[in-house]
Image (tube, rainbow, N blue to C red; front, side, top):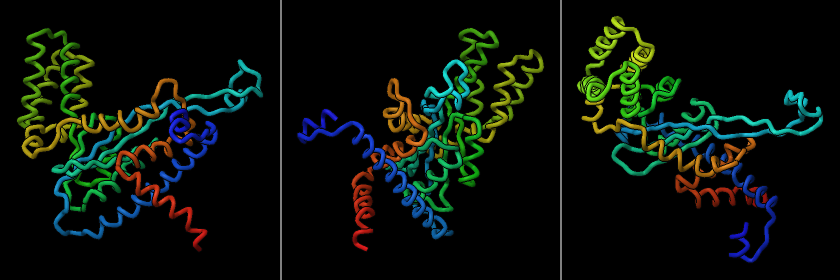
Length: 309
């Protein structure tokens, strides 16, 4: 507000500014929905033609945003306050950011919503189509193994190759080595030996060896590692992925996640009305995707349409 007044010489009240920003944000959400729905129409039209993009990199990452809703103490179930008194009920809600980029290109497109994996992946499918994805495109998705993510990915992108984040798995091995009481240099050699086998596409051998250790000396942390590898046994052939030029880590999407939602919605002390989160994220996405000018032109035409009619 201060910068605007200094630059233009006009004083704008905070309430007015908030109202106008929210209206623009709601329009940005509508713009994204319309744009991405149109984009998905190109997917089936591509049929069995050679793919415009042979390999598409996808990513998805999440964080929690603090939200708050005002209600009476009675509605909130607060017996420590008068029933009619207004209180703010706070919750931490999951916000998920998605990224799509042709493997051999630099242009990235993003989506970001406070929603389920399925809803975010539906939008990610749309930006993938905008980037040239067709039914014959190989989709590659590095991820940190979050619960339900891989299952949601293969539902929306049949044939996608999920890759368990390499640094993430290394940390699992190190934590397990600590739980087993291993110290350096044995700790390092224990972890390296198994990771080298995974690079050589020997996941069955790794699981067999770990299971034998578990049978001889049961350990809860080792059991967790074994279960984790069982779940992702088709996602840890790192040598083969590296030979294809595929990324082995999820750092690209983690960086985007810090920039798009966290930089604005996770500032110190922020608490958001849940209804306003997705519209504000839509504005962030429009800006990150370099659609800013196109959005304002679309918004102007939509506002003029009733007058022209």
